[in-house]
Image 1 (spheres, rainbow, N blue to C red):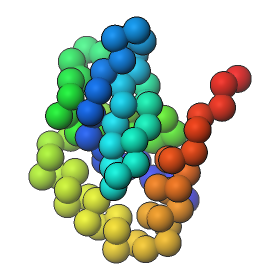
Image 2: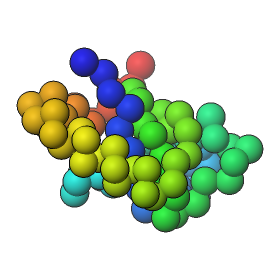
Image 3: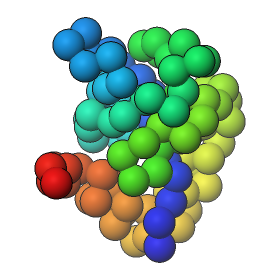
Image 4: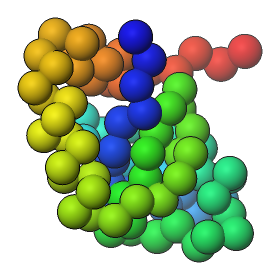
Length: 91
C-alpha cells in the first residue's frame, strides 16, 4: 500500500531550493518540494508526502487528524513509516 503521509516541514535546504527536511512520528527525511514552489513552503507548514515528493500543503488540524487515522491502520502505517525512514537511492 502506498500512502501520502502528512509531515511537518522542519528545515529548508538553502543549497538545494527544491528540497526540505520533514518530520513525522520522530522520523526525519529530505523530500522534494518543487511541486509546491508557487505556494511558498516554509518551516512549520504541513505537507502530504508521497514517494519523496510533497504533493500538497494541508493545515495542521487536518494533518493531525489524518495521522490519528493512519495510526489506527496499525501495520500498514508502521510499514509506511519504515519505508519513509529508508535512504533514497540516487539514479
